[in-house]
Length: 46
Image 1 (tube, rainbow, N blue to C red):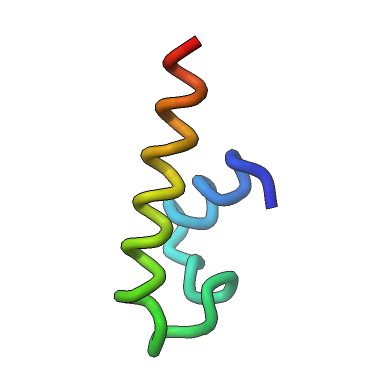
Image 2: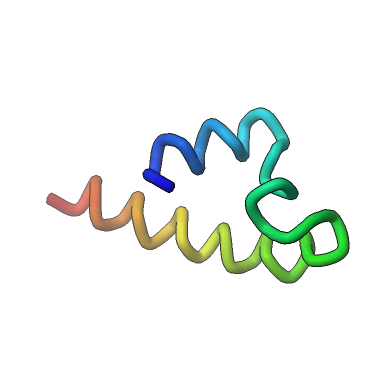
C-alpha cells in the first residue's frame, strides 16, 4: 500500500480494513501515526 493510498484510507475511515479490524485500531492507530509522521518527515525533509 502506497503512502497516498494509506492517507486516502485514513481520510475515509477505512483503516480498520487494512489494520485488522476495530479491535486492533487503538494499537494500530499509534503505529499509523508513527508511520505517517516518518513518511511526511522524509517527504518534506528533502
